[in-house]
Length: 522
Image 1 (tube, rainbow, N blue to C red):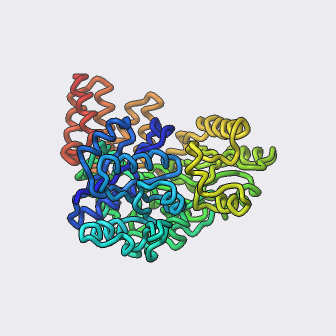
Image 2 (cartoon, helix red, strand yellow):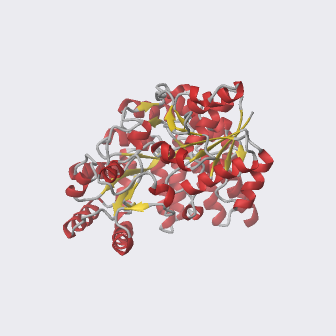
Image 3 (cartoon, rainbow, N blue to C red):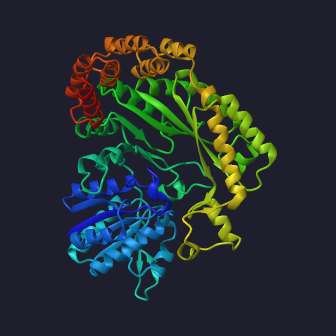
């Protein structure tokens, strides 16, 4: 049996780097299927026109296709399902993902080409669905699906519990095979936990993953990091857990293992301001973390309460100050276009940001998604139902559309940009960071980079050399020295350092590119 796990981004997402990425969840499902010897492959069709999508499906002729649906790509994903049935009427089509989970009945009622909808996390459900198809059993025997009953009406099969032991699932990298994949970029997004105890009104994570958090163990996490560096060639990884730092002992043990491993990866993570402290931040920095993002959303206590963020302004201030003390890049998420935003709310957000000085901020207009409290409230008021997502062609439903929403978005975005220069670490800041963490290669890299940007390559080289003193095979230091020497007119010296780096991580595309540029400059 041939299985294809496919994704196609929505129209606006066609030019968005993150929207075009293969969903991490499909990578986990693919790994689970392949580990059980199913012929499963991934296909990222975001960059393909529809005639080429059809040609690919005719060539592949999958017996089972799984398609991920977010709200923004729902029409493209469902069109892909229809196309799969057109080229192979016997193909079983299962759609999953957040949008599919929360509008399952509407999808089955409105889209006859969809065979079933996966509810929630999909690894074991897809595995059991594949086994059922292979042995001729009906999909109604598989827990975790919504299917059509005898009267063609949508019915849920038995409930599927969440995976309690995440370490029992194979991680995506070793099984990442397929069509039109950007393997380096897509495997660099790592998930180490599931679930969220928070109940933010705009987020469907608790409904999709559950409110009880589940964690991968530090050993399992480190195995994936080692694979990504040694087998894929990655030197930078993004941990995309909603709240990576919530389990303090796990985070510290992971950082200890990563330091001891000498992988010398740089990485980033996300957290909540009430799930962090300076001890955890110090361990993150020592282990190579260079960037942390917090969902702050607003500086107005009134709006934070409306969003059910369950964080205080004092907690935001404390987390930001601790983050800056240890030298991490402070990044924040903000929400624009919140209904009933008042002048004093705008002023409170401006005042807070000018105090905490984030290095960058990502602003998102407040949108309504199925599975959120915002959406449920609209349904109770009779303002919307699931048919909206079938009839309407807009990719997103904003709470504050039109000129007012655009103005709110532009104001917050401009504020973040205006703070960038003031937020940058000064030389005094960088020296304090090195004093606090003298054995953190990431801290010294940041300081050396600042010397380069200030036009002092000699000072930068001295600091890169200091990294090699306490970490002789540090790939980042070797690469930065090689790059700096190449730009300074010393291609022979650059080649020496870059060869050393490539012997350590021979699969690194970044190092190959640096070596090629150095050779051209010789």
